[in-house]
Image 1 (cartoon, one colour):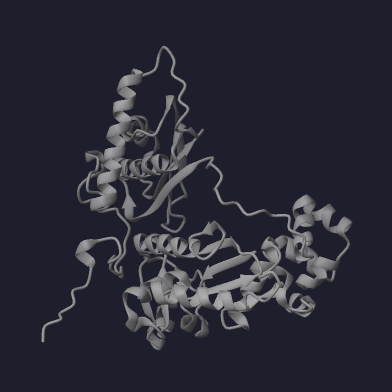
Image 2 (tube, rainbow, N blue to C red):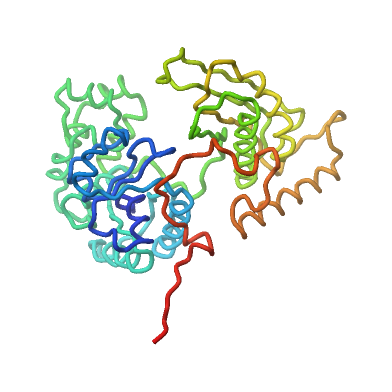
Length: 422
């Protein structure tokens, strides 16, 4: 089993577009430029903590000349797609675990030899083709591959084959128990109170004791640490049970019109996600909340509606969601965040009509073709090329991203020009 992980992925993506950032301390901010959510290795070395609000970290950032960037989700998603496409050429099977991580299957040579040379070649190819540094961890199981990946970043220059070492116990003994994949904060504390402080101690502790606390999940983790594979590779992601789109506003919303625009925008994005997932939703929920720091009493509320027929049609979902806005808005309660949650998801291929269905079957098929055409135009010419009027033209509540980098991989206008004259 292999785990390939992008090093400081958001920060590395920023350096791909601006090579001059390589070697400089760099941080990436969350929505509305609120908190630090990613750091380059140089920024980590300065002791800049993860999750700290920008206003608190600003003196430290300015003192050390740290580069600050807003989150560029379009860039990160596109670089992730390119990374996974590249990795698929190098491995026998691939499981995309997150935006910057993937488990993979790679058979060992017939003599059971070390795969470190293969890992170094893979790492060099990704760096050459995409400009992204990655770490490659190799082990008999997923948990050991994850552990090997951590060790590769710390001690082995980006590649480590734990399955090829003669005695893995010293390496397991060097890994704190709270850094083992699958061990949360509470379970780590429980382990330490019982003298189980390392991955090796967790592997060797009495199984019955661990089962009483963590159940079969803990036993599987222990077996994985022992080299017994219990977590298979998932090459096809499971169907989603719900889809959510939510954002904080750049400025509080106190009126109905901008709240309707925000809800319409989130519904449009959620409907697009549903169509990408080839699913339809039966239940729609809109939720809002105020800021707990604005000096007024905290307010949160939600309203739901069940659709007569599961749908991923943006117009149908908008018609169901927009009337809920007036139910959620309260005088003197400035709203800081809103979102849309779609539940009761069903496969796109299965749609059970009934006598009271809002649209005949033939008209439903035409609507599906229309939605597919809109999605295709937005993919080809950029998000928002075709949009719903309810979303507004120039909303003032959209995310604050004052330090946003370019989107040269997804936008033609952002591609840099090279002057080859002379």
